[in-house]
Amino acid sequence: MNALPVRLTIDEAWQQWHSVKDPLAREWLVVHYASLIKFVAGRLAAGLPKRVDTGDLVSAGVFGLMNAIDRYDPQQGAKFETYAIPRIRGAILDSLRALDWVPRSVRSKSRSIEQAISALEHELGRSPSEDEIATKLEISEPEFHKWLSDIAAGSVGPLDHVVADNTATATHSDMHRSTSPDAVVEADETRRIMRQEMKKLPEKERKVLVLYYEENLTLGEIGEVLGVTESRVSQIHTKAVLQLRSRLRAADID
Image 1 (tube, helix red, strand yellow):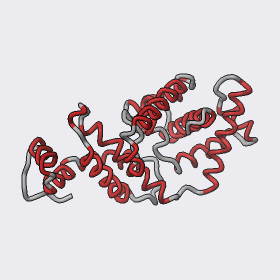
Image 2 (image 1 turned 30 degrees about the vertical axis):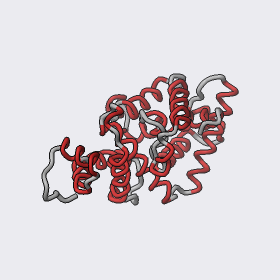
Image 3 (image 1 turned 120 degrees about the vertical axis):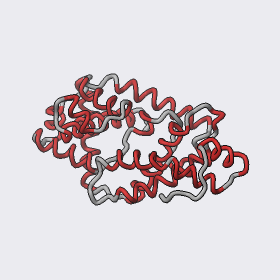
Image 4 (image 1 turned 60 degrees about the horizontal axis):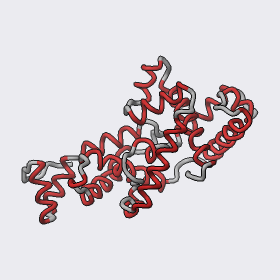
């Protein structure tokens, strides 16, 4: 984004935007907070296939940032960055979903693993191991790992709306519902249930989710913490997400 001819302080820009809806002040705010878009887009792009252009993600994120600027109310007490990041993320996720680039075979593998996990949890009364899931699917454990890698390459932001965000569901297309009391209650309840279910996961899977969604570490950084490769962290993350998704489906929340 190019520099603007008029220099404003952040307080001046917000004051002009809130008081008279000065379009120049709005444009200045977009430029000032552009780094938020690059941060979110870069984090989401890290796990996507190379054919997905990061520039397209940034372009979609601009709409989320503009929407956040338009709707931000400092009287609510939240920092703008805290308010804006979920909305930027939501706009980018919506753009990815609209592309519908995930192969049908990958969707099928994802559903099969979720169903196997759900059946095994019912049978065993605990979280199943990777070997047990592979046996249930009648495939080898290395093949199961490949399935997880394929799913990871075709997934993005699977838990953002229930783990990372501290606001109601805030995707770009759902923005008009984000201030609804019912939407807030529903989102809070979903996050509560999700965090309860996270506590029931095996320690390594739970740790990966906490480090990724709450500590904002990259998969590579988590690999350094756990002493495993980034691709292995991606597999652990994907299994944990699928397990949580199967529980949400069972609770009719997904």
